[in-house]
Image (cartoon, one colour):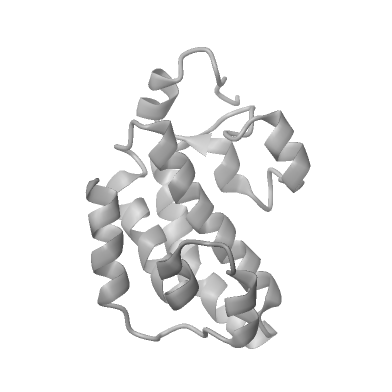
Length: 149
C-alpha cells in the first residue's frame, strides 16, 4: 500500500527532466498508466527510491519483483535512445545501481525463475538486478535461491 501511495505521489510531482518521446510512449504501451504518462521521469526517481529505502529492507518478493521491473523498463527505454541521451542516463544511473549492488548480494538463480529468464533472454551481466537480492528476501524465500560465491 505504501509503495502504491508513494508511486502516486512521485508521479503527480514529476518534472520532465528526461526524454519522453512518441517512441518511448509506444514502447510503454500496456504498462501502468503513470509509467506510460511519465516514462523515465517516473522510473528513474522510483529506482532511486528503491535504492535509498528498500534495496536492503524489502521483505516481500512481489514488491521486489515490481521494483526490478522498474529497472528492466529503464533498460528497455535506454536501448532506443540516441547515444548522447543514453550515455547521460547511464551516467545518472551508475550511483543508483551501485547503491543497489552495495545493499544486495548475487544469487545463482534469476529471481524470476528459469522459464521467465529464458523467455526474456535475461543475461547476468546486462540484467544484473535479476540476479541479486537482499537478505530479507532470501530468508523469506527459503530454499528458492542460493547465494553465488
